[in-house]
Length: 217
Image (cartoon, rainbow, N blue to C red; front, side):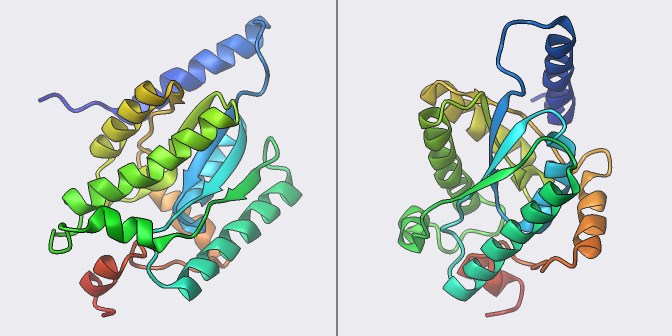
């Protein structure tokens, strides 16, 4: 099975958008992107990269985070980073929408898959949970694209994330923006930006299963 280079696919979309702007084609500008974010550190490079092409709305929706204090800390860090980027005027203004914190939805999704290894089917179901809600909100808000920061992590399966996102986008009738943000030193840049902004950088995705796997249980 041929693996798709999703970073290259993203660059094709961005090149097309740049050509559209140069040619003065009749469409709204900038295009609007509804970007699911798992946390501030992962979003740091993604936002730096994308905000010169899109008017980005960050959708902070992570019911997989099992403990509310952890959830709140990450949500506040996300807001703090966006405020800093907007103050610095790195690109088009970035807005944020915080989704409902409903960990029971994650546990329903994970039921029967509790003993799966990290990165397996339980994680795929979690990606789908979050991306379905992202696509739904993006369609309701009449955004041009939806996407996720999840592909920046070397521990996440970018091929699977893109397959899920594309399928959901086709079903929902909204364009999926492909990505593999870890490519071209994207992950390295996210580490640098996390240090620059003093971001809280966790070492587990947020769910109780990943927390136990990371040795925090």
